[in-house]
Image 1 (cartoon, rainbow, N blue to C red):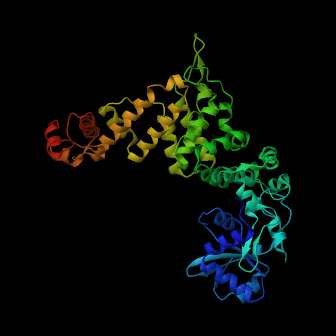
Image 2: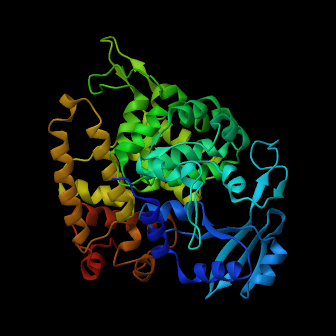
Image 3: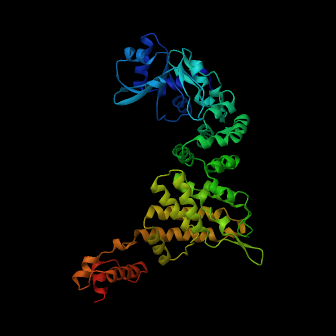
Length: 455
């Protein structure tokens, strides 16, 4: 059922915070127009809680300061933006503006103020982001954004080639919005995204990293995979290190799809954790370099996990991902092919290798998704093994045991007090005790450990 403009306006009126309405009211009382605009309108109409409430007005920055009584911060005078602080909440208000030429493919060379709201909305990227609302006027939607929202369609404002030529980041934003909001991409917008993907070369790695991270959090992994497959050329534009995997025939009875498709399908089955999903998308990056065909015509990929870890580390460093994300992804890629067996001893060693229960759960999730994206005949029985292993791992976590040497109930000081000398031998003895605990041959209890120290 299509909502009426009145219903849309009523929805926005209910969701707009009192602090935002207070700023809007002061501008209107001074004789100016004032609207909430952009992402907050989109999210409110979708029933989501907006993160930011942005406003636009025909008042100039100086006129805003005269009309609004709240404390102001000059956060973007060059672009007509002032932030007002209401009850400790920042509210950005920007004068209607028109962007000049985009000579660098990222930011306008200049902006000029305008008195028409429609001119301001026309410069925005997608129709769903080009809507405005005020209690005095209702919803202003000159480009059909509300209809596109209800149709779950992402469409550029005006000519899509022009929008993407102005700002290359919009290509990635198109993929991110489509993935996160469950939209399909309108045909002309999709065609322009493919054509203008090279514009991403003008975009900083930090901004691409931000969009990619948000994209990986899409609530529906299968829809995310649909977008990634549809725009594989765009994804490979920002991650050329993965290009050798695209279309790579794995030539192995365990696999029924090419390497790139396999990785995307693994990503699709993982929960919306950005690092884990990203790892699923890149986990077999090392396969092309390690592919060797045997005499039987079957391809093998010995060492691909270790090779993939190197490729992924270099790629994520280039894209300016945080060190924590890089370290986690590299570890998961390096370990994803070390299949555990469902025994308690194996579970303890698995946890010790991970060193952290959250990482252990992520590695097991990656292994399950990886196995599920194999050929059906290869999957049979293996999924049950991993499920059984997961039960044992959770049981091992409840034990009062050690998963690192630091978890032992004794330490180097205890050995020194019993006559050991400082040096590598001391560490080796702690490792021996740890191995006994890990194998289940010795409890992680102080008395038992002290008794087991070699004298």
